[in-house]
Image (cartoon, rainbow, N blue to C red):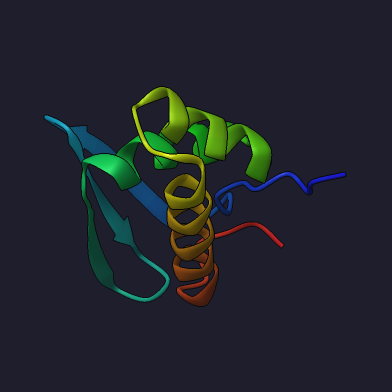
Length: 87
């Protein structure tokens, strides 16, 4: 079973601005800008979603299966590396 991927509960403030997301990570005192594709995933991750659901979201947006898997894996790995995901 895919694990639930979710943003951490504390130290993150974010806002949707047009088709992007702007994030303030107060724990690291850093800003992060998320592009349109990342914003689509960000909203789902904020609610909590598994990998399969995230891939489905990108496929529904027109991405091919291999590209959707690659983009989801890279985006989730980046968020994890930045410490933005719930353990």
